[in-house]
Image 1: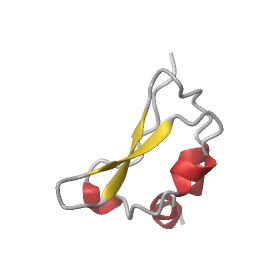
Image 2: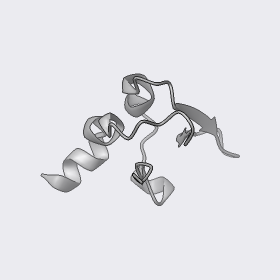
Image 3: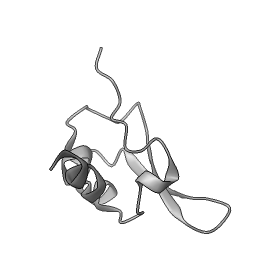
Length: 66
């Protein structure tokens, strides 16, 4: 069984740019607003096909792997 992509562990690891949301081919990602008004991605495990496009497009993940 494939694991659901881990977009971020802490809020500081996400800038809320919606790149992951925009690239998801299955519309499995929704942006959820927190109590301060910032939006963070949430993956619907039932829709996710584990293509990891969201991880590949993430500017935070790209800078950490470079």
